[in-house]
Amino acid sequence: MASLVIIKTGDAFPEVVDQHGDFEQLFIRRLNDALPEQLTLKVWDARLTATPPDDIAGAVITGSHSMVSEQPPWSEALKPWLQQALADNLPLLGVCYGHQLMAAAFGGISDYHPAGRESGTRTVRLTQAGQQDPLFSQLPGHFPAHLTHAQSVMQLPHGATILAHNCHDAHQALRYGPRQWSVQFHPEFSPPVMRAYIERQRAALRDQGDNPDQLLSEIIETPEATSLLQRFIGFI
Picture (cartoon, one colour):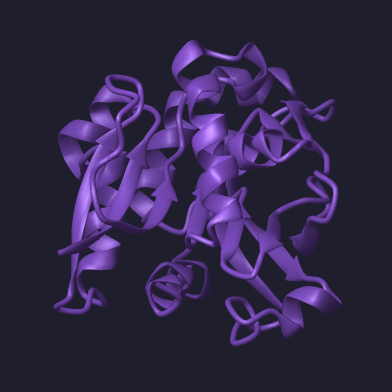
């Protein structure tokens, strides 16, 4: 049976894993309800093995606490696989680290954002291309999304299309091919997971001039962002 594969690139904080599940569980929870009978979900931990599962019909690449610019060997080993997947028109959706890794694999540059970390529930706005994109076009022109990242896509790969942006990051969502997308935000996060991340990052956020208590008070549900996961299945 064909599989939608969750490519695991990292672990969530221990308290998040204990209370809400690790990154792959967050995705499984969101994807299960929309999964057709002919598809199964599999997890490929790319840090442990370079050999992908058989019969991959599509892939979602998770977030990570690693940094793409530091080029971990397992992460570099994923780049040729992603390049081949793009050439084969395999449906792909990269999230956070997955977003930055896809951009780097396809010829862009991902690195630390000069404005620092972006955390919390922030507004993301569609570009004109995003409003016409088959995956994003059903979303409103602007919508809330959960974010936590220190690195960003700083330079686009050739041929990439910007689908969404906000005041912090010009590249919140990208398309690379007919069925290959990536997003900087976390459609798999729930408000409790977002709260746990801000609590963990309190000192770092204060140091860069953010108010963690205000960020906590602004956390809301993000159904539009989350809907991208279920809609992505329709392209497999």
